Amino acid sequence: MKSSLTPQQLQWLGLSALGILVAGAINWFGLSTLGEAQNEALAFADRLGKPGLGAILQRPEGASGVRREVEQLKQMIREIESVRAERIAPWEQATLTMSGDGKDWSTDPGKWKDELIARQNRYLKRSAEEPENRRVILANEFYLGLEAYRQKSPSPQETPELAMQLMIASRLVEILMESRKARENYPTLCRLKSLSGPSARAEKNPESSTEPNRSLPLVFDLELEVSPEVLVEFVRNISQNSVPLLVRSLEVRNEQQTFPTRSEIRKGLEGEDRAEAIRQNETLKKRLLLVLAGKEKLEVKISVEFVPWKNPVTISPTTPAT
Image (cartoon, rainbow, N blue to C red; front, side):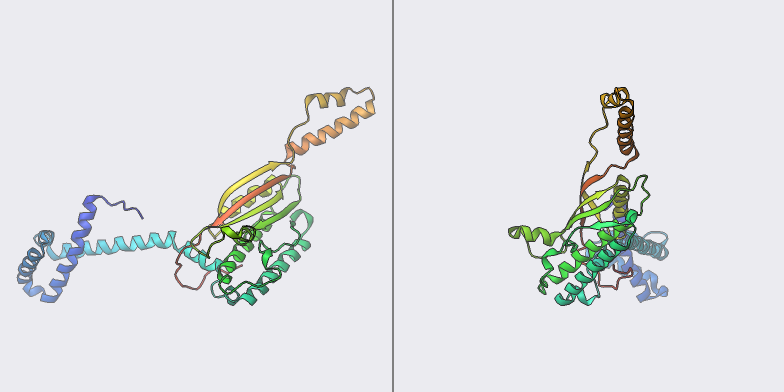
């Protein structure tokens, strides 16, 4: 954390810290011998080469001023701790939650494999049961980006890292399914074409794989077919999630590339066969309205990353893991 204290404030902080020594001396000698204790403390400060301490002892407000400044110092420390709790504690908590902290499947390879299959089945069932205008169509052989473990269990060394990958992949699927509830003027099919994480990339490029390191970013790539409304909701929900996820890159291609040209519309209005002209005109109108109304289907590639807190405090999670 970069310090924002001025040189004068730093000097005050140092003097206040020295004042703690004075307060201790006062308590030890007693108020009845304050004058004698003050003289001895001044001599002691001179021997230590701490003239600033002598300046504190000679101030008119004496011990009461020292006590006041010590209390101010304590208050400053409390405020620093409060800022830390506000900024860092949620990150630590999210890391614990995403690690499956306290869950036996997060360290046991066989139980981890069971958890992967259970989550896969849960999302496939949920997809099948949702009405079409709220359904996220999942890719064939969907395994939350952990397809390499369809037929095998991980090693004990791999399991903790894969537990975090499974949790983050699950969170992204949950966010997409929730985002599918966004209101669409013209509902468009929502399809999760692929989801891949660090293990999938390591499987494709073994030479680039490294030893597990939870302080590194965990990057997940998704390919989607969605409406503009659902995409906007998906990005918004990622940014507002309790787990600090970051959209790293976003590539969007609109299936509808062009509007009907004026000449196409004119041909539809000026054809010799009036019935054919009317038919062509209605077709062109529909094409134009589909684009203007936002029914166009978007082909999306999006990368989302999570950077775990390197050494989260070992506390029990207060938010339920999903």
